[in-house]
Amino acid sequence: MLEVIETMCKRGLIQRLTEGVKDIPDKEKLTVYAGFDPTADSLHVGNLAVITALSHFQRAGHKVLMVVGGATGMVGDPSGKSQERKLLGPEDVRHNAQCLKAQLSRFLSFEGENPAIMLDNNDWIGPMSFIDWLREVGKHFSVNSMLAKKSVAARLQSKDGISFTEFSYMTMQAFDFFHLFEKFGCTMQIGGNDQYGNITAGIELIRRKCSKRVFGATVPLVTTASGKKFGKSEGNAVWLDPKKTSPFHFYQFWINTSDQDVENFLCLFTFLDLAHIQDVMKQHSKAPEKKIAQRLLAREVTSLVHGEEQMKGAELLTKLLYHDTAPVIKKEQLKALSQFMPVTTLKAPSSPLDVVTLVHGAEVTTSKSEARRLIRQGGISINRRRVASEKDTIDPEDTAKGKVLIIGRGKSKYHLVEFV
Image 1 (tube, one colour):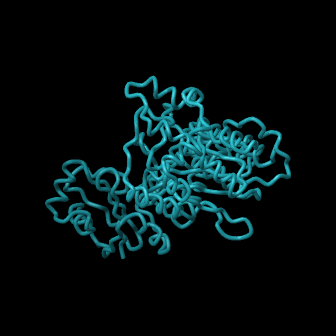
Image 2 (cartoon, one colour):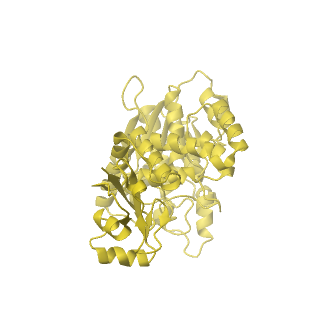
Image 3 (tube, one colour):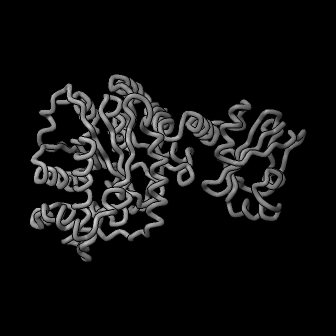
């Protein structure tokens, strides 16, 4: 078996392989592709396993193709869905496709000796007429075999059934594989485990049209503790776009990983050596409350998605919010924190500072009356501690020169105050 596939199997990154993959000679160089439909303007955590798998292939010297589904995104994949997706208009799909192209370019190398290639399937599907499609593609599909696919069978059992539009999706993804095989010599498709039926449809289309053997592999789906898939239509997506999920909240998602999942996620979503992960887990098991493994996971994945600078800022903010009280921080750390919240500079007072003056002076509220109202409602916290009364004061020791306070408004808005 190819060394890269064996490595991914050991990491738990491969869930299912089609027939013949294990017979591919170890020295053979593959061209591998994965598709991403632009049904939103950002990818999410549910896409990370596929992206990581592509990166493993590229790092091992194989050619990588990334297809943004400008055409398939107009139809919608029924796989894993209990009801039909809302159809997007052409302008929405084009906008989302451009956003995904820009985002995907952060995860793979598009330069050097083995650059990844990004494509849009609307370029080859869009020009075809309906008659072209029926003659060139449709005639190679057996309705009987399509009905037997799990994604279709599940929808046939549902209340709303499946529309002809979604039923046809499988033929579009299969044609992508055929086109990439013809033009780029692509012989392997990877996708989430819910894509297995679509992947095998492409393999069968190439066999029928070209009498050639190609392959497929699926990666595990990221799920919640209850087993629910993470994704856009599930309403629980953790986005890769920092405007939709901030690097801080992205970091928090990973640091809150359960002890049962953290080793698996380190293997799936990082490129750390497996022996190193085992050593970390041994340390973690001795003191689980220190979250050694979770902190490593959060650092690695946040750096991969948002860069090291954003990761350090998220890590520092986590420390300030959940561990320290009125710490002294460095100027460069202030810069990192300013990525996540407004920063206000105030003169260090010589006497106790009342909380209403602090909250209003830090521009957390537009007036002192609003500050009082929020405090009475329990909506203001200072360094994680809820302000109990509008008559509370802050000790001068906590507002000395060089100290900072983090004022929380509600559950997710923060404002940093630096004293000079």
